[in-house]
Image (tube, rainbow, N blue to C red; front, side, top):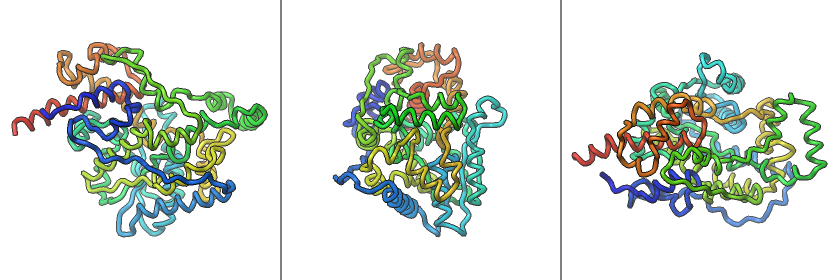
Length: 425
């Protein structure tokens, strides 16, 4: 069996995306390194641009970032949920390829799931698709979840620290059948256009401005929705991994939290610091899986020049009076659909559909695939008796648990099949 990097595995199972930065380029195998995808920005002075001037520059950089990913000789598709980021990419792609057929891949929750369908974002994506004359393809990642996990582990040659690229495997297979060469993803919006700025925005601490915002919002939306908007979600990405620790599902537990002074410090951590593991892996895993099918996976929102420009702008240009992604909203309202720019119920391209599939199916897959008497690599990190007991009680919605279960299933599959084959050869 290949020599396992137990230090890396231990840090991942204990810390998730809070793994120490010095281990970000490690893999689960000793002596095998990753190529760093950290974004190192040149020092730039704080912008003196007005909001409108900054918006104009932002729009031009967006257009350029998309143009870099496109070729008139290639067949193009866009991951489309109908949210701000993916709708913006779809709009800019159509503007630059006006006469070409452009495909839109959308994850959809089946109509039979009546409760969860309230979170189905496909009506928004359908609206965008019709406006831009795109060829829309709906995906259902629920089918054969265990096969998606096992195929991904074999293509990658190890486990994936992130979830959603695995659920996009059906997208890649369909894209290959259609002859699509390039897929554009809107991933990166949180890192580039500050979706989490509400935690650090100083102006909301100003009583008068805050009360003015409360009054304006209360006039326009229902109390229930308004209450959701006012609730500050303290449990962000860095804390999300810890939600399963109270269940004592690991052989060891530890708690680690990161503090950020403002929006800019969080942006830096998301792209260059300890939290950067998530976005680096999301891009790396997506592109590795896509290359297996001969497809180029592009992420225009993480274009270096765009990120460097955006990160040095004042926080108020990014989040203002309850509006995250302020500049992206402004761009969409002026250039595309105002209703998309006003959306507040966004959850992500493969989320919530992908998340729903995982919550519904992962416990069953785990209980069926990993035997009760298992004594392999995973037993060093997971308390499998407690894991099984927890899963038998019903679905788990914790992102931390979902990541751990997928990682465990991928490692088990490699341990059971690929590693043994390599020894026989």
